[in-house]
Length: 88
Image (cartoon, rainbow, N blue to C red; front, side, top):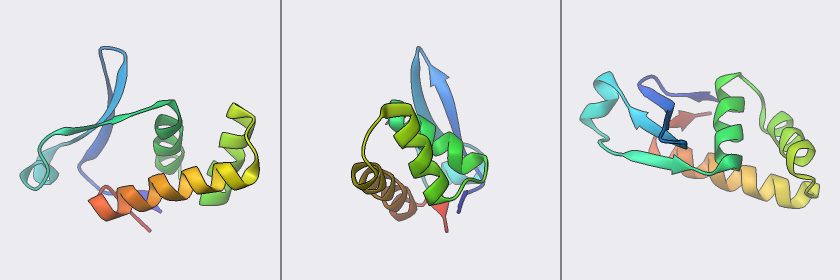
């Protein structure tokens, strides 16, 4: 799983957002705001972590059970794949 070329996360006035740059900006103009969990998932994908590793990171960071962490990570990742920001 990796972030597609042309999509980057930036901090804008204390808020983490994903924006398109370069060629990606031709098909997506705007930004996606990320909450704290989304930021961790995005950064983890950028570092090359697997879904299982990301789930473990979320469990450690937020003290949630595995079922809830897996559901949240899967929802986020699948949404980002559908929107064309990341690919498996």
